[in-house]
Image (tube, one colour):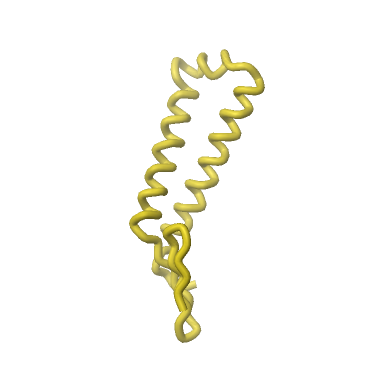
Length: 87
């Protein structure tokens, strides 16, 4: 039996479970990594002065976005590194 969702294929056969991370999901990992990198670059622009000029609410939202992107990147990277390995 195989289940595929969001670029991840989980296959169970003869008591063994395997994971496969497809090209689309790898592209998603690359995209999220690029988004996080771009956001962090903007936050650090001119030594972070621009970021510090934002109000507290905006700073909180930007930090929330960075945290959310980081979590997505970590999850996708974890799946990618275990791709094809038996679990």
